[in-house]
Figure 1 (cartoon, rainbow, N blue to C red):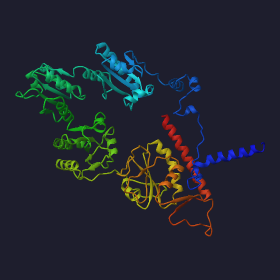
Figure 2 (cartoon, rainbow, N blue to C red):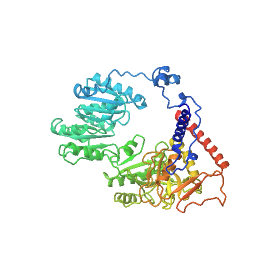
Figure 3 (cartoon, rainbow, N blue to C red):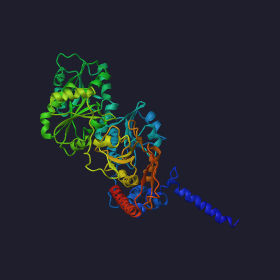
Length: 597
């Protein structure tokens, strides 16, 4: 029995050894040890890692909470502001249902995360709004839910970001997307839970409103109560961007530009814009009034700023958009023509002016669309998932803008894709792809192509770079394989979508370029990427690590259908590995510094 123990130990050791190396043996029995990536030594303590959070005994040592640990590790940080939330009700899974459906008619609920900076910034404004409404006896209660602790509630209401704010009223819940200030919250709640319209009875009031409000909707009625007023009020409750007013005074109506002979009930929308007056000519119903306001409340041409950015990019009322890119000095001459064109396509296209020489908000849009040069230009944008863009050729004139817009609506234009210049030399192991050479390199039917779409600022892309370079180095002798990368922030192609963010790795098999590329969802290691290629390539290949250069007599030729990559001689290989190690350690240092700051 005693003699069997060494045998047993040996067997177990062998089994463990086989298990340890199994990850570097592919299905064909190929040894991929040479593709393994050395791990840099850990030369910093746990608490220096910006992702470190103390748990268990460590949490007790540092005071029992992550916040206490942060305070201990950064004693010079200013203390968090004290917020008086005495009028904000804290809800949880056990109390939520009864509170919002039975105890109270109108409840605004904020779903927050304790670590969320936006939630912390909102806290004093939210608390102040709760106190003001309580003191006014409005009947609206403000509450909050810790969405991390009460994850079931967060899932029930599809909370995807923080803070998420809803008004629960009469069995339904409405999202709040307004400004995160006390005044905005209070104003919105009063509109949703009380009367949404205000009466204007004097000409002085009317003149003051025209001077103070950039846009407003006014109804001229026979009576300030009754069915027409109620219908108008119902419409006002569903429109968040414009204030609604009503009057039954002919003198007041005249100030609001109603014709003296107009038939009541009548509605106008007034704006402090180039298009100042819009007349409602539909049936006096909630839905028709809302449709009229939605179609007319925005300027003919939206001047792009930080404030208008959400309207243009996040929630555009019209998906298809036409942009004018021009400097501030050129805008006076061109914007007037742009506005005239916008009148023709009102309700069909959204017209936006970009002050291209504005460093704060103009230049980022120029870079986003890949606009080059300094001359004024017009660009059309579908705004859909495909995000197609089209450029107007030639001088920007009213007739050309109108013709361009007509062709855009008729889908007669050729898409424009942004691209860096084609590199003068492209001899590296990783080929550089830009929009202009994409077809030549990636869509070459004779090549199996692996393409990384990256962003220069992306830390995950930077972390992947040494791995990707190593893979390319070991496959540089395989003529049928191309390892390539493309800066996805400066180049586009319809067959290269970084739908999952950066980096996105796509594989284009030889002979199948008409099909969509395969999304590479394997681990981001050289071994895993190599195995992926072995599995999906059209043209088989095999990488070989040559310990020494074989003689002519002993060299075995590769099969005609199989491509073989050889590894450099030991000295060169060791030098390259040293360079890679230095690169990986430098990259890790940069990432750590970036995360800490």
